[in-house]
Image 1 (cartoon, rainbow, N blue to C red):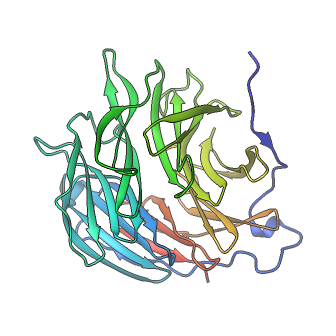
Image 2 (spheres, one colour):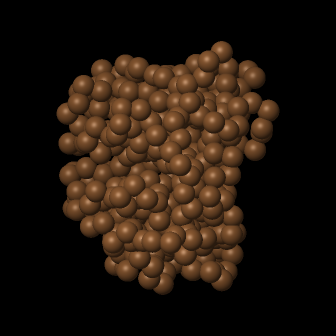
Length: 373
């Protein structure tokens, strides 16, 4: 069978010192860490996501749980940019699955594990009020396998998440939405013997197919018997999807993250222990493979600001690395300091006015930001 492959551009080392020449205004160093949320307890698990508003300010939700923080502490809301951040306690409890922003507020897709609950969507309005939210599905197995994402525009939203189906159980994608009209309840949108998981959603308002959905189909993380490929679907406001395979090289393709800017989709993911980035500016997806190793169990992040594309990921030395493409050349620097206690994980990327801000979790310690100088 003939397989359509991403066309690969030449691979370039991303460490600044490895370059013989640097284009003007290369990515700068990063300021020391600034606390976003420093809980008064020690945690061993986390779920965090953030979205940016029209001014580039990040709005997000985080739950830092386990150990002395307890098994289900309240979710925290945070917002900020660069070195200035605020946070507050929300009325919500559960696993943060996805966050979206529009001019009416910040949306939270989350898994409430308390009895009688499940996958829910709620919202923090621009005046700081928290809505009661809505139950989308009572069906879930565990926070490790229940993944999802959400997008929003003009007070309406679209959510996609995973659920176990059948016996033996397989993971498939489900959706619910209000974009395009009234509330459309839970609906199954994939049905394949292979597992569908790790969805990421991006939105282009005003287009015929405003929704871009990219997910993983194949084996589960850590199981290498079956190749995993990325799949992409374009969705309309009527709830219909047109899908295709983004067949990739390598065996394990995990954890996609996507942004749509204009007519271009920017995509990053992990392939066999390396961070990848691709875009379809030319009409087909052209990819770059970075050389600095990435952990396979952490989602990389892609961002766009002032005409620049940014990619961040957690390296195998437990530090965040952020790369930017300048005049076709990828240049990167570490965005979290060496010598931090415990493991460090990238959980968000929020570039603004052409400079990067990385959101990181230091396991057992805090949620913090590092901003490019």
